[in-house]
Image (cartoon, rainbow, N blue to C red; front, side):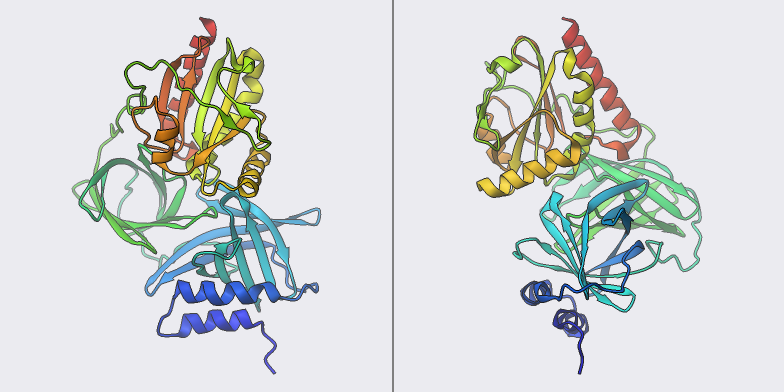
Length: 425
């Protein structure tokens, strides 16, 4: 009698069927069955380096790397992308399965143990939506290279234009660093960067991918002899083409001029509750005669995660100088239990000591309506600096995270210079 868990059979059936990577059928079947696994100890040891593959649809697979580490009997999973090692979450193992709660994105890896491989899905913790098929093996590479060397070093910065299905163009900056046939990079947008991408170059063709627990990213394309590049983003929702031209001076529009106050306004006015229901406002005594940093953020937002990784320790070092921070959270759900869980997880992850408030749902229009002094709202995160008199001194749209190198360094330098200037007045 075949004693393998039923959900593994379902996954195999999905992969081998004519509807090879049907995400809908996987979500319906696996979500119901995997929770019935036994809880007896297993001889299987999950520790070590793994190469996972998202099976998005027929002909499209996106690889990613992760490692599982046991420290004093507590197992955790870390996603590896280029130089980053991103903590995913705690690992729970049963007799025939491995579960990883990715609380940062309200997701879960549910993987069945099959000899020395893992097979299962990425799904929402509450079982809603579509699950994405995953398999994983104990391998330490990301993309198969077939031994084909890169014909040149394509490192550098590029003016890159992405074209949406409706024909609209978005100007971005592509940053690439190549060593042999290994390549890392990111794309800077006015809404934030693509974080850490990692991949390979074979001949003049490149592939890049990334995954930290939300949804996988995959870029492929070609570097051409004339200094241009062509490529596309591929995913479950289709593809988006892009073109680029090498330019050492590639740059985005000025991030300090994209979002501003409407005529007649000097500041932003709000009164939002924290997770305990206490209303927080810039008019509170706590913030009077202080420089205040407002970050319009969300626990679900990768660039907001990068910003919190900077702001949280910065606040600890500077709070005695007469500065405060308020995080205005716009979340994917607004029911009390969900928001409290999301904000608490976010607070614990980064050691946040400043106020977090529940500002509304994660929707750009909702932000614009709740903060009517702004001319528009373009990006999570957006950072607003308030002077000691309570007036807006600076607004920065988007965020250049650590993956952007010198662009991140420039932001940190400019941020500190503005704070220092306002404190000195």
